[in-house]
Image (tube, one colour):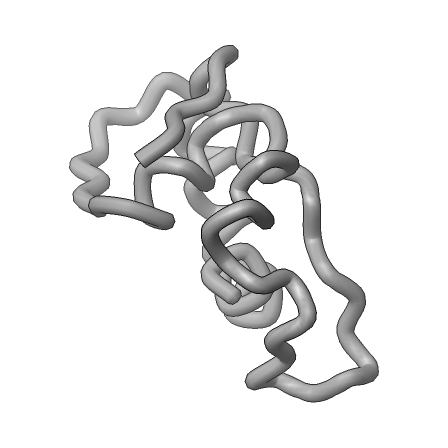
Amino acid sequence: MLAQAMKLSGFDQIIKRYHSEKKNIVYGGYSAGICILGPTLKGIHLVDDPRQKPYGEQYPTIWEGLGIIDYVIAV
């Protein structure tokens, strides 16, 4: 759900742009907020149901993380 919210709001592109341009920003998060920083969200489906669609069925499940870190965090 967080990945979908970030995509729909455009925040995913903003944070990736700031990261690629090496701009100083502060990002805070826990649980999904930290998992989303990795390269993939596969495996998270074991604890969060990917079939939940609070933004509508027309939006597919997003399995890609933001790729800001190159490893996956399991919370």
